[in-house]
Length: 281
Image (cartoon, rainbow, N blue to C red; front, top):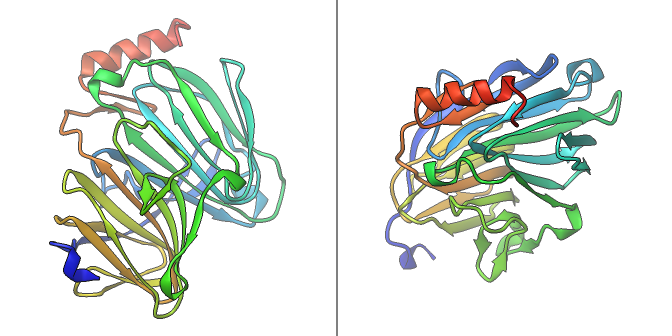
């Protein structure tokens, strides 16, 4: 299998997520967006919520603004209600994914619809290029049944959230950074080789068990993110384990960031704050 691939990407950096808090006191693990891994163009932030204590997440994420990037929410367990100032509303349930393009500005909230039990999921922030930062806001809300799942040789299972896997097209479409986002379950002894364009940055976050990644088989354990180096493919081998894999086209543009606003210049950030304060979102 490896013979058909020119360059298997090595693990360039291993980082462990750090405890953090956001929204109204929601406890989470910050994987991208902290001191050890500030960003990975075009990815700006990756958080994992995982708790069966209602007090850790009950406050949720009350109404807040975004401009200039996209948020991706993937729910593994629990129920989260979202709504915005455009009149959109929906319920995220286990296995569902939402890709929200904030564009020129939106006010939205994400609140739990449970007081106890396991709440588990991810939020990923994906940057928008300068040419698209002020596009109209939009949602892609994908129910669990609409996410394709592929079973490969050796019992490897892949949920294709975005991008393609062989002939299988992901649930989320028409995203400017041409992303791949996969939920991969590897049994003991399982292996998968994924083509990744050299133009894309890529990472693999292990959220269950452990997985060997790269030609040298670097062992990555639960709670660690592997930042992948240059190449045109990545290989993952079973531990067993489960991995959130993402790749996205590098934008190679300056990033000006202030809280929920991500633009290219400080002047654009000041304008975003002024627009928000004056009710123009």
